[in-house]
Image (cartoon, rainbow, N blue to C red; front, side, top):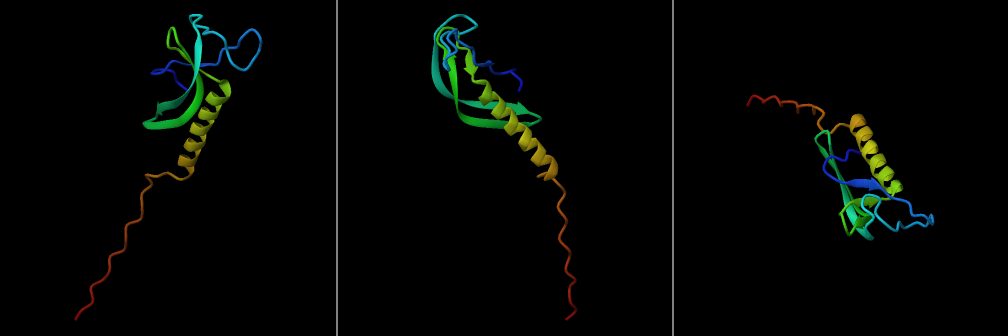
Length: 104
């Protein structure tokens, strides 16, 4: 997943190895848990996943996402790409046959 337009990062670990991080690894600020939407624009297609748990730094605004959520999003993108290869939406459709006019 590219990070050109977003500041998505893998979830930082805290010293106690609890699930929730204590501070932002970028600036040391406090993190707030929120649900966000992930978007990735790749190859002319927009991929979107809603309500992903994330941690937002209240100081610098960096977004920290659990690694498993990032991997799930990347896996979803790969599955969609594979399906498009097998069943392309823009494949040429056969033209309908012309009916012959009957003589009256």
